[in-house]
Amino acid sequence: MKTKTLFICENCGYQSNKWVGKCSNCDKWNTFKEETVMTGTPKKTAGLKAIAPRKLSSMSKAYSKIPTNIEELDRVLGGGIVSGSVTLLSGEPGIGKSTITLQICETIARQNKNVLYISGEEGLDQISMRAQRLGITSENIQMISTNSLEEVLGTLEAEKPDFAIIDSIQTISSENVPSTAGSSNQIKLCAEAIISFAKTYKIPIFIIGHVVKDGALAGPKTLEHVVDAVIYIEGERYQNLRIFRGTKNRFGSTNEVGIFEMAENGLKEVKNPSSIFIDNRNSKSSGTVVTVAIEGTRPFLIEVQALTNYSNFGYPKRTANGFDLNRLQMLIAVLEKHANIKLQNQDVFINIAGGLRLTDPAADLAILLAIASSIKKIPIPHDLCAIGEVGLTGETRPIAQLARRVMEAEKLGFKQIVISQTKENISSKAEVIQIKMIRDAMKLFTS
Picture 1: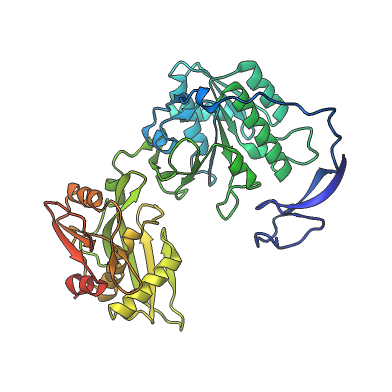
Picture 2: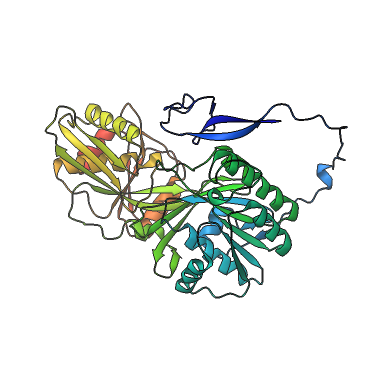
């Protein structure tokens, strides 16, 4: 085996013999870092070794889970933390990663389990100060501060805790790899070693990961492939709302989200997210409509806000916060062609209140009503909720779990519920109005 200097893309792991400004694989700029890697053919082993296979039917079908007793987090994890699993927790700086991990340590320690917190970024005094602010005083939590993979694994083997936190994977390095901490080789080797240890000793481990400036997880993409679960914390750093979203989970659904609110003493669960998302609505303002989105198994009432303004330039601007811009462009085209609302000289801005990222197509009808309400300066009734997908020909299309959405809107006091055409039997005390074509909705509420 020999060593060789290569340039490796930090975004996708593509390798080049020389430095280049733009990666030809992922089209990212300035992502190549110099690394020293091992090359050549490894020496052949003396002989092959066989492992006796086990019958699937003879293996236990049950696996133990440690509940965090934080309901919103357990929902995202699929009921708790599975024994021997490795979970990657990531998010923007200051979003609350270290805060929630300390809270998890506390709730697990209260179950008479030993917890080990390994920090590669902060000193023990800094972690202690945060713990005091959060009111965490459990005797079952132990802490070490190190950047050495060998010390991390040695401490884990000596202590054999019931649960461990590593903060963060980008700060841990091995002396066996001739590169700096945070490089692709270091992250890959350290992650594989930690995962192997977790599987061998059945110790669940949470790994905190950094993100790059565009919000993607720092390091090679293989890091997300080798862990058992990946959880992203979303939200604006200077706002209170935090959304936990699982993008990968080998032990549960990836459709669930957990809603938290940042407070002085840590992240607090939001038991009724709908009340947060539609709170402080102005009943007399135009350009605002409420819709119902489904995230996993829960319906959320969400306020959609639209603003149109005369454009002084030849090319009008379209901006979306929390909504897909390409879909917004499509919906604007549908509104112009099939509802005769001209937006060629109008800037259009869409905002999803509360910081939630809305991907549910059931919001289409609310988006169009909000835009029409803004340009015509006609407020939509405060007690009206719009639910429906819109097609390119201007027709509304059936959506999933419509009855549950209507029930949630009715429960929160909405008197009129506008829905797309459906064959489903919808029973509600509120007035349910079915819309076949988008122009029908415009005539009813913006004329």
